[in-house]
Amino acid sequence: MHELPQQIKQWGYELGFQQVGITDTRLQLAEQRLDEWLAQGYHADMAYMHKHGLKRSRPALLEPDTVSIISVRMDYLPEAQELMETTLNNPVAAFISRYALGRDYHKVLRKRLQQLAKRIEQDIGIFGFRAFVDSAPVLEKAIAEKAGLGWIGKHSNIINKKAGSWFFLGEIYTSLALPSDIPSQNHCGQCSACIDICPTQAIVAPYQVDARRCISYLTIELKGSIPEDLRALMGNRIYGCDDCQLICPWNRFARISKEADFSPRHNLNAQHLIDLFNWTEEQFLRNTEGSAIRRIGYQQWLRNIAVALGNAPASISIRSTLTNKVNHASELVREHVFWSLNQKYNNHQAQWETDL
Image 1: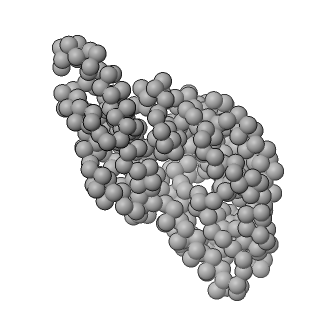
Image 2 (image 1 turned 120 degrees about the vertical axis):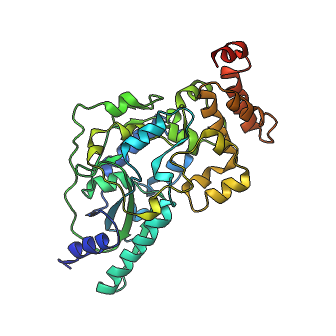
Image 3 (image 1 turned 60 degrees about the horizontal axis):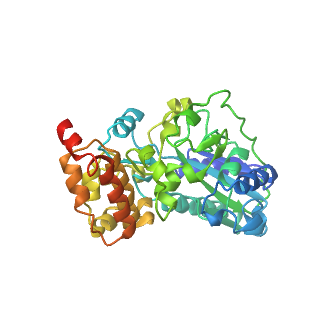
């Protein structure tokens, strides 16, 4: 058993994880911070953040007999930062958070975690375990920090000193009593780059993100209407937001992922807003099959792109594209289409035609 932790890490590397750490289940400080965050209402309408009670911060309540947690990370960066910035700075290009360009990470990591657990079983026999990938009430970031994978940055993402923050996390809750690794130390220092760059100022204080203002929440988790005062601030970001990672100085150490599953599909890293807005629902379902993007559904997809088109420079082609959907069956889509048309067209038609 004293050799098992190192063997687990080696097996993890062989399965494609860039780092494996081990920690205990004591998460009292994280529980306190979660309670404070919930009390502020920063979770917006994500009721699942509190409905499970203490199961999120007390692992044995979620999975009985859990005494140790194996925490892993897998890099997903699909392209160079310069290419991401080029897309983000092109107002007619669609920017999609880079974690969602390839195959759904839930599927990729969960399969590898199951394989890791089975490998452990081959060595020691049957034991109690359960694998998680952002799929249950698990404080994955606090666990990763305790397991030595990195520290929670001021933007609330995990940062690794040698690898930046472009990686996914996964966990195996286990009944094995394994020795814990040394927790990571915080190295953000006086840096406030992520706070300053946030388009909607959603990072309301160091280590505190107000989901009600976060573009990732607005474009993915929010099912209804996007608040009007935030729409113009969203720019061309149609699914998630990576600004706080792009600006983080620690990401100069990030490496392009070797996982083929995380490579961009259907050229989604460099698509024109108009082309994506013109996808039929059938095309949307086909082109997002096996992708995390599909979870938002077609109506939210159109809602998000409509806002981005309203933020783009005025053009005849954009006006025509938006006008084609003013009678869309979805009230949600129509609302955001009308908002976008009113930004540069209906109320300022003479001026924008002159500008063209």
